[in-house]
Image (cartoon, rainbow, N blue to C red; front, side, top):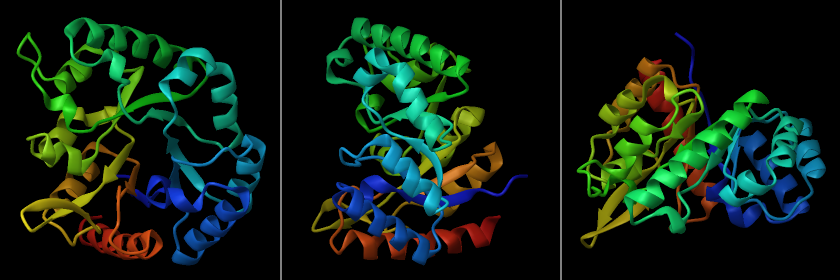
Length: 258
């Protein structure tokens, strides 16, 4: 059984990766924290060659990215080459674009395009992956949820998933069960926790909230997930301090179950 690699989803640190200079400092921060795995998401308009130089200099394992669906539709060859520069094996979409939501026809069109894009990526040695939120657990006219439709009707070789523990729970499913449902179609999982404060849900550092992330980790281990990355959409403290707390706690979870 392979050991799961642990790291950071840089969307959490997005305010600190908008320029080359700030990204350099952020990568240095990751190195000092002992984090050598990252997902690139929310980065500023930095030339791909400069990003690749920083990735190589800090010896980062970039497991996946989030990129706009529009670029996948209209600029896929260049997008693939940018990922090969950083030795990144997967390109993720952060969410289904709004124009495809709200109807079975729109959902079917998205699935058709995702299958086609995923097949083109696969031909070039890159994997397409879809990241969920909670809206995908709405039931459509045929009685299935959007998420179940995505899982069941997309090509299992060409479309994989980046499940998010927080949004699974918010969507009304049991995260470990859904992780096992996805099985081999997930290489990267987002660990995200939340707490209840004054009767409202708030994002929380890993293992300081209410999600059973031990069980989520065991499910990831059992299906052979390669990477778990920490994502926190908003933080009550400096996001770098939040990442430091979460990474230490995630390492402790891993030590209990690997």
